[in-house]
Length: 273
Image (tube, rainbow, N blue to C red; front, side, top):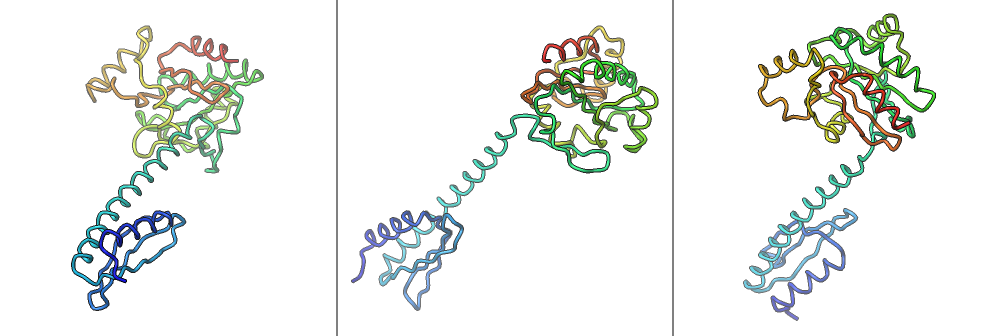
């Protein structure tokens, strides 16, 4: 029995819906007088359906239907991929979802620090703010037994002020400032090569300005104004010793620019312990 066009199309669409399939396309074979649909099952298994087309109207309608279904499937696939990507991004809700590398290049999950208050700092050994190492170590010594950790991530992106190797940086900090808190592999905090951790940190807390009371603020602002008049509008890390305060649930509470008083930083840390 020859199917009428409407019945033919309805039957095939219903069949493919029942199979939970995405139509990919089709090829008409004139000398065999049938049209083959190519589609993929939800389990990614390739399937084929052949439809007898013994008159020109049926062929045309079938071809149009196939094109329509293929376009619909493409839209569904794109939406599905976007949805999957969005779900992955939404899962990145705490600092514990990220990893950094230790000095030897081994991956370290920040989930190891669950339940602790963290201060994540991008540091440098030849900067005007480098003496903050001493203050950071002092705060760490006072508060580490209460569940506080400093996570030191050296960075050479600002004035090339951390030029040494990871081992050289560690030795410098220990000998000059007696640091004992965790120090990780040198990394980038801005740009294409930035750590995913820092992408997330900057999304959580953007730049809110340098502290007017710090004597280095005018120098920094003058330097940035010359380089980029719109620098205040970005969430980028501006300089060495920018700090992010993380609570015991792994969420960003505060961002401190390097011009912020270390006494204020310590007060904010204590409020979370």
